[in-house]
Amino acid sequence: MKTRTSNMTLNNAFKTAQLFILCILAVFSESAFTTEALQNDSQQSEKQSTHSPQVAILQYHHVDKSTPEVTSVSPETFEKHMKYISEHHTVVPLKDAIEAIRSNTSLPDKAIAITFDDGFKNIYENAHPVLKRYNFPYTIFINPENISRSPSELSWEQIEEMEDIADFANHTMDHIHLLEKKAGESESQWLERVMANINQAESILSKKLGYSLKYLAYPFGEFNQSLQNALTKEGYVSFGQQSGVVSQHSDFSALPRFPASGSYANLDTLSVKMRALSMPVQAFSPASNQQALNKEISEFTLQLKEHSDDVNVAQLACFFKGERIEAKFEGKVAKIEVDHRFSPGRIRINCTAPSKQSSGRFYWYSMPYFTPTKEGKYLD
Image 1: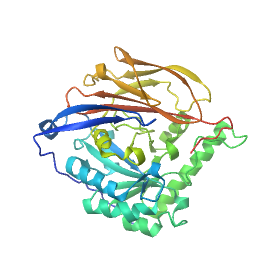
Image 2: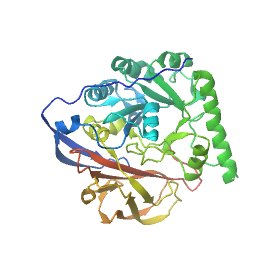
Image 3: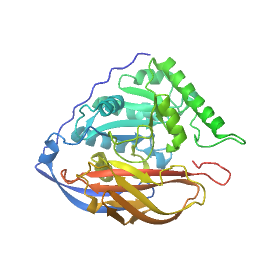
């Protein structure tokens, strides 16, 4: 297969003199949200962005009506998403966005990158024709072991056909729970096994495609610090499923993406997220994403970086388990009181704050936590 040369696609700018946008800040850990009416000056949107290069990455799985609703978007809704993006955003190849951010070179304001996880055949059938019509580049994270082995999965022939606008990257060999240990497995044995799985997948992709992006999307969005360190050491850029915008503030071993399927496919809420900004977070606690079963916590702490004056901290809103939580700022540090005991599954705390200079845009940060069952299993 031949490597595709990606070109950024320039879309139309806003033309209306004034817009009222209904902002519904959806919470990814649960279905809770808050609503407020925001007035947006379209002339501000047409100005050159004063923010550092950043990109909002969308994450899709299925584009189909007959697949699991939680990970699916209908072809009709997907078409609406792409039409909206063509009118209000610039779609860039994921690899161009990552390279621009790491080298601190310019990106279009409100840049979008489109990604899919798992390599389902309905992407070829229902998404690719739409993306090709709009000339939108995109990236699919696939499991090489599953390709051409199931009627619901892509074939290598279809992948080759899609390469005119699509890049393909690593989602592990077989979509395993990366944090799950086998019986009697030590920490070093676990890490050696999962890294072998990831590297094997990358090797197959390199042989089949003729290139290696060394991008990994974590299955189920699950990761811990040991895995992040090992992947960074071997040159990978890795992507999670927590919400947020990618910038130089981001951790390139766990980059955020906005899910755009299921309950997150609503364009009223998704459009707000696509306009979001990367919150300049210095530290967050608890810092460990992997949490022990039944561990109790009473407080989350968020610390902003020194140069974060555009963040309106007075209007910081944090959400956890479907509820808004009051945050108390002391300088650049926000303390968020909770009463929580970690139970099996995945959960996130999400924080947003308005930009002072960009009307209608919000800084966004999400911290995910992963907890196993008492048997050490991680839930799908």
